[in-house]
Length: 111
Image 1: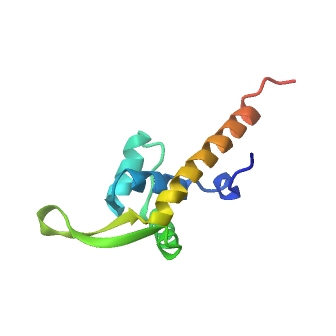
Image 2: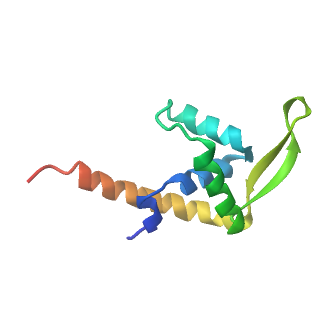
């Protein structure tokens, strides 16, 4: 089985789809979740996140909406659309295939 060639270069979209599949989140929250879940191994910044969010929104995979946050501060939350919900499962399956192929390549016995 082949996989989406973009997985070779940037897993950011797949990570965003998975996180937004869990719940709606605002930008800083996404960055914090990524950094926390990876124990700081990934240090996402706004320059990594927002261009990808805009690309996904333009493609109709996610939508944004303003909501009141803590202490009345408004935040822009991102949510999966129906198109995004359908895409997340195929992206996760592709990731499993990609990951297994990388493991076979990198950790195969020499010889």
